[in-house]
Image (cartoon, rainbow, N blue to C red; front, side, top):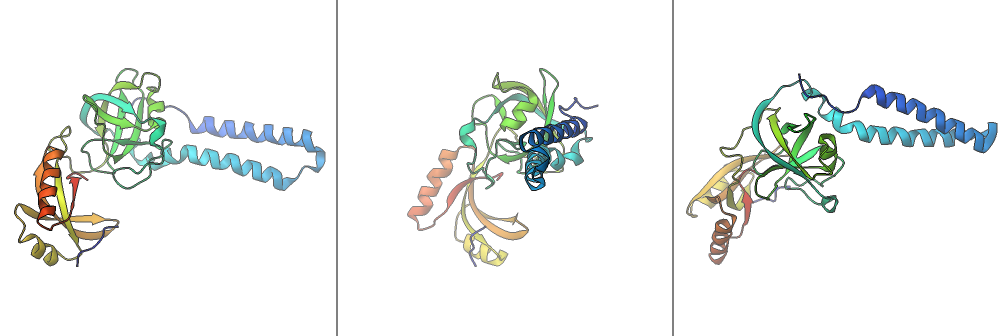
Length: 255
């Protein structure tokens, strides 16, 4: 059945500083509210204000908590080169893995690394570092190796200059592509829940193959045709397949 697929460089900031700032903020808010409303200040209003501050702090710390298990992992050096960062126009756009890009999260784009790869990015110019998760493809500008979210770029202090030379260290266990700098492209013509169905469909298509994929804890069997380092060659194959009544789309093999 064919289906639709649904000692490391010092890190900026401190939890103690956040706690102290939070306490001072609470005190200031209470003092200002009391001056404004007197002793009959609404406790409910005060609670709402404090809840708002807690939400802001929670959001600011969420990415740090997400990567806390990787803070003390040295990682394996995999690449060095120039990093850049996304402009604000990309906020809310769909990333290559289907997420919505959030400029305030610690994410990044890489040409070939598997999605959800966890990297430590070290600014070679000032030794600052940040941990990011790969959820998009790029950069597609010559001589650049990674595109950072604005939040990650702020951690590395590259907002003003726009770029910086960085080193990448892989922190989690993922399978690396043969060539980090060179993406590969193919044409996907089918996706099936059962391997036999995928094999039967692929049998009559030249240069086709069946690849198992795990998506959101579900297993699919994809049918791919061809493999190219040029996206234009993959698009030419797609047009040829369509002329023969076979629909599909071009995709990056590493996705």
